[in-house]
Image (cartoon, rainbow, N blue to C red):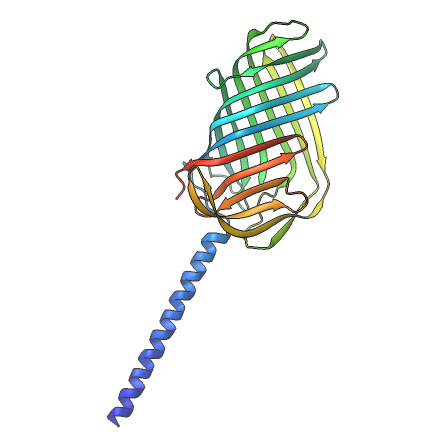
Length: 286
């Protein structure tokens, strides 16, 4: 009888232990999956610094032109406001070095500018609004300000000119960089997207300002983005396990998202109106 009771007791202990281990493993798996796949939670002060070793902006429409080709060092994104229930506010700064070719048109006529932005004389700053629900881009505003060596057609020699170029990009719908929760072999679509970009150049000619307006339309593309298996990706900030996300057709838009840093760690994009290649240099995200 004692042996029977002892055997039943041991059996219950083994069964209880097995269930406990199974529950613990299940909870650990759930926590790991949650950390890897769901949208990260950003906090004020979180920052990511990138090196943009190649940047091209190329808009040409109705007699106005904005062409910039260069790089951005210490391109730092910092979370500055999380109080809104819908959006994160990200402020960015950077050191811009670039050649430019700009045609500005106003009621007073057209001006053609060519020259160079130097990172010691130029300040780049701006704001990006991301949705909290899925880190989709809602709005982008940027300002380039400083002193440039510019040639004004028809003159043949450069002049030192102060300038301020303000760019605002409003989107008709949020741009779906991500579709959380992420997983391998996940697809999502690009909705009908209208982009209105307003650039305003001032300071170059005293009180005269020159507006530049561009409107671009991207039609709905089914299954536009494709999330592939995670792979080890090495950038300046280190080696991270990251999802590769790319456009299905042509792979003209390709980037890597690492759950460990809660953001993109590498991007390689070649679009009709520009191109960018960037890698993560450092981050304080934990």
